[in-house]
Image 1 (cartoon, rainbow, N blue to C red):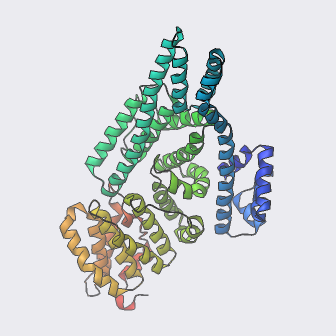
Image 2 (spheres, rainbow, N blue to C red):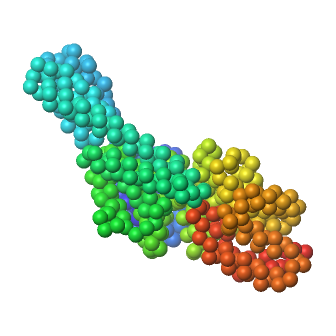
Length: 485
């Protein structure tokens, strides 16, 4: 709620009236009421739901849409002065050919200051190239030649940093689904290389890009204690917050606020400061459709879904996720070529449906997943998805589907090797025990296997660890198949 209110308060009075007028024009009466109430008062979510006379799911959907409308308006405001600058850059040749040299140089130097203010490095190289030519008979020629060369090198370093960001998070997807030590080492080496690139220049942008990897790596890859010579994670996040707030007219930084809100959320979740998790969760949840669709080059967005599921399990509200997802993620388009992100998205949707007792939707999601993707790189991920599918079929008492899949799962465990898929093997043993009504001491064996599963700590993302095995489920597993309800 805090971030949502802050976003509304960022609007100037004129901007507020423009957004309100657009909503009125589109007959969005409830959105207008929500906007007015948050702008003028400081109500909590419960008060707003009562005032709007809507359910929790409808309320969060309404907030999400209004949040998006305001963000779109603010981005347009950011782009407005930048557009004027771009037009001036396009007119450089016209200035050179039609204006006296002194006036052309003065115009370009003024444009240089504006470009530095907005940190538009590509356009600055065009200005320095032109100033270098115009001062060819002047002592300033060497100065602008140096600026041009330095800026070309900086621009290349910036391009490399952006590429490394994208490759790092692509590689992280492989690590998340495999837990491979080789992938972990590659990520660590990429983090060091990014640090080396960012140290070449006193650049706040390189510092921000380096921080994206550095903080993420500490939280999700190499969870060791911070070294004495390293900046503490919280201090690093605060430094980036200052940078982002100092360059409010920068459109990239405007959107990077979402990335760092996600890192703050992950930081507090990592250290189990759940009270502060809630300070970020609700507002980030509203922006999660955009986070999941548009930020894969700057972070690994699907980790938000894992965190969201774990939070729901911790708070015993997992049954609420499915209906919320229908309204919140109706326009989400996951790229199936990005297998790790797609895998987590489907697992999350399937588990959400399962916890809402919508077994048909859950099994449909998982069936499409196991048949849609090539799993050669991720055999463990494929195995756990298939076991999860069998488990939900079993809970739904679709024994025919359970029997059809059981043999191939056993074969896949033998191919991988049980020592390399301990969680999958143990969960499969749990299912086999539950289905065997003739087994002696069935209840004790089920409880023993549940105990083993609870203490296992995988190095990879394990969907089976997101199955809530409470006393109620244990009793269902122990119950005879013949009387299973």
